[in-house]
Image 1 (cartoon, rainbow, N blue to C red):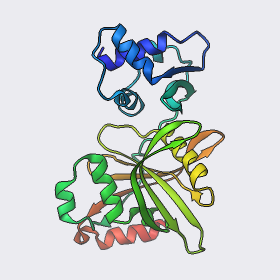
Image 2 (image 1 turned 60 degrees about the vertical axis):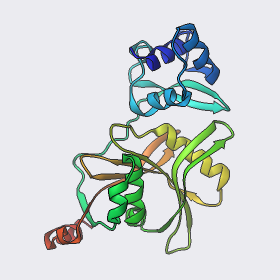
Image 3 (image 1 turned 180 degrees about the vertical axis):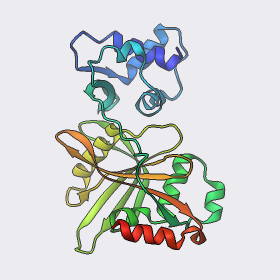
Image 4 (image 1 turned 45 degrees about the vertical axis):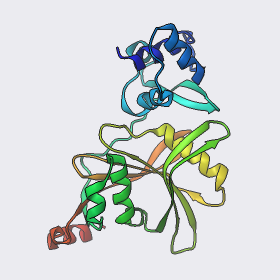
Length: 260
């Protein structure tokens, strides 16, 4: 068990009672537990929470307390305040049976050559290829990326990128984009936070949260999600592969035409 697992396990078990569906804790508790265990306090405390939200499973000693069909998630509840929350298992993963759509790649080669991370590369490809326009049938414009902000009921959040858009009927949209590369998991908790931020800060715009991920190889999976009965649900999903224009064949175009 690594130091992150030991810290989060102690924080949970010291506060959990059988039957609890919420277990509150503070950022300071991570420091106190690390010191009590004789573990060097991580320089980036937020990485502990990020790891268990997106990269790795919680320790078995925590997951074993959840009933069948339920799982523990970590949510913000205010400034430097959090809670373990017991929720219905909800995984958003690419559908392997979905058709792949080839899109002529407009990413500048110098950008592709110097992309710093999977997440940054993915956001850049979406931006330069106007994939949100293609996916949603709107004219979309990047407003800001890596926005660190706050939501009253949650505390600090970070949005990977925010787009605003307009459609042919004049409706205006705000689209928070969550991007994950490598083995990181798409998070329904982050989508919930993005929705709450939209409602709080841009209530006059229609909020359409977007999740996107590199699936196999360079395949880009895109999801539009919404909040339905207090759960994040997928509205639509498409898979795109960026290729040289010469690789989009007449057969491909015929297949897309017949799929409408």
